[in-house]
Amino acid sequence: MDILGLSTSPSSGGAYALILNEVDGNRRLPIIIGTFEAQAIALELEHIKPPRPMTHDLLKNMIQNFGSNVQQVFINDLSEGTFFAKIIYEDNGQKMEQDARPSDAIALAVRFDASIYVASEILEEAGIVSEGEGGELSTTSESQEQTKEMSKLERLENELQTAIDTENYEKAARLRDEIQKLKG
Image (cartoon, rainbow, N blue to C red; front, side, top):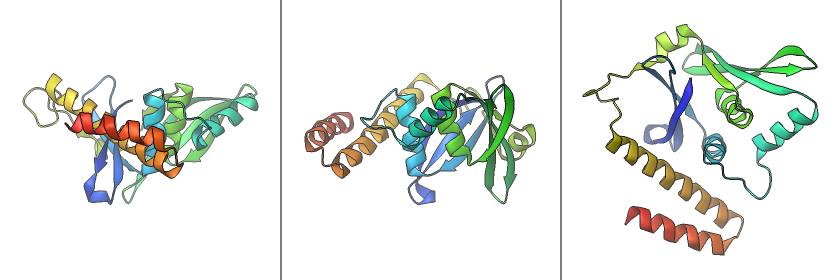
């Protein structure tokens, strides 16, 4: 699977939907994740490095300092609407597994450039088939552009909130102006 994108999920009280896309197929898997995890994934996907390490960056640094490496993430279970995942990593040449929330596991996967896998029975149960041209899940260049612009807008709004929270008002003003241009 690869990451198709992140979008707000109004029905989930401000949470985000992380959309995974089947690499050699036409199924997508939406996973509802929290705001902080969505921001952690988005920052890494957009190659934005905050001045101080975020939680997942810290975890990556610690894993590497212990001589380990995350190889893959496996979303292996779905129970009562909750997804479960395992982080597969190497420790001194030995393959190890660690239980994790899918959002945290994927935030680490993007930092390690690790593969993301989903059990076939989970894709059968919770996956959405992309209908291709003419279907509501198809992606035209126009809808891709709107999605890209929306994710950039969401990213900028998250950055703006962080700048305000950290009292970096110069950056906040610059971000506010950039957001206004996008909404323009």
